[in-house]
Image 1 (cartoon, rainbow, N blue to C red):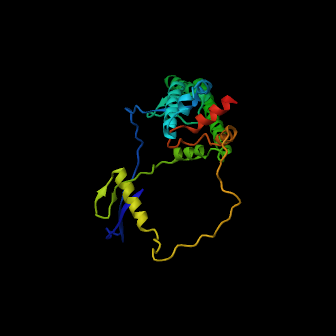
Image 2: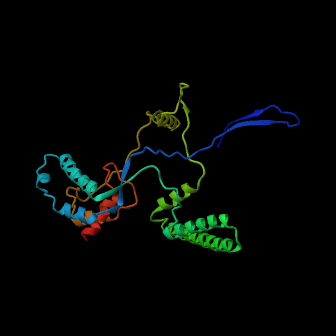
Image 3: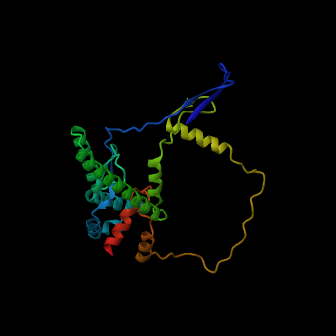
Length: 268
């Protein structure tokens, strides 16, 4: 958080004087954000599975290329996603603590009401009632936070994203890329130009092999028979798909792993 640290001549009785820039961060919330994402945790996978079973595969089998076959199936699958998976709106995220449940909220509201009542009528009875509600709310929040952290710790091997998300929520600063100067002396803040400058720098410090040196000789290998036929059965594909981590992000095909896992489990 410190930048442009400079040592200046002494001032008065001080033998040195330091000047620097303090970098601070603020949270930004885009209130006009209309971007929506699919919530694959709340999809109607029974209906998706039924519709997939009703799909006529005849047009897919006569497609001239594999790419065309995949594009046709992908369009059908995306339609099922849009019809059966709910969406949520990005932006304006709630600042409520993740471990606070409905019961905790009720106790917090009760504490606030009693405190307002205590301010309007400062009696010993009202203050004792407020103090009791305050202690109950504090105890409930501490217990909920402890249980939430214990649950994250128990899932750290299977779902480490929950742990790092909780860690980021506790940090007071956010990683931000500021302006970068290119080799030509041009300062830019454009994300694409910054990425290219950083990539060119890291590529320049790599060790380059001498092209005059001969390439290493690979040892010869022997095999009993060439691999000509690779059996791919429905059971093999299903076993491989069930090993997918449903907490990961989708790949280039934009098909969420949770969709693949849930449709297979619903079928079984």
